[in-house]
Image (cartoon, rainbow, N blue to C red; front, side, top):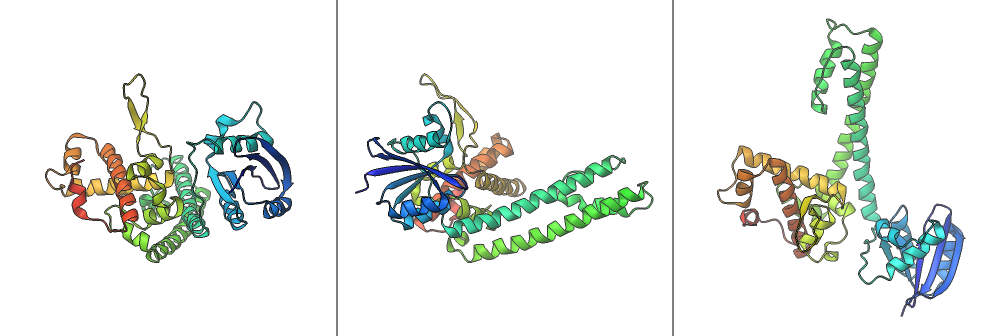
Length: 342
């Protein structure tokens, strides 16, 4: 039976350890290099090792598990209240140990190598999209200085190209050449984004869970891969409501004195999945506006009395709960479920 808790404050070169018994008695404090840390943990009898969920934490979780230790990850915001006075590496390692001994503490599920690989692919595409958006905005700003106004969005890139080609528009040659250079960069980014999308789509075809998720309206390869890359196993959540709360799709509470006060969605959870679910839900809402939903259904009643964006967020919450049910029960989406009264 494991009788030692080791709090580990990770860093690139120096790693600090704080070891205690299960009841809190201090056993050791150590400051080790990466090589010394590996050697020490290989010799150390099986213990509960607790890390902050930060850079390289998931890698070390897999390594330490292979050495026979039980590894737990804690979100940094749950460790911060236990730091005593001044913040330093030793104090952080001690705070991690104290936080881990709290019976109600919530832990982060360690990611597998495949999950991290999918996350790298997903982030790669997101980075390219942000870079392309930056280039498009720089191009729009340049043209605006010469009286040419272009709406936001990549969809207006052909309009920008037409402006640059139009010799009747008074643009200096230097500006026109710089605009052509920016257009070439935007086209290069677009090509790379499309290549990344092909990779993401291919990865989603190779996953049974991703294929199952895409049977739900509003869920495509991006959402399915994001859930596989960033979400822990659905069995770690007690219910679909817990999964929706983990995504930050529930109202913030300002309740006191027995009176319930609810605000906007908390946005306290996984931002990538939450954003994509809201986008997918909004696409479903737009379709329902063009082709009215079944009379008496939840979606039809909501659209009749609430703004579209609010309905989309509420629908994203329902989608999150259904995703939990689909993955835990290993079932495809059933269309009639959308018409059930909330």
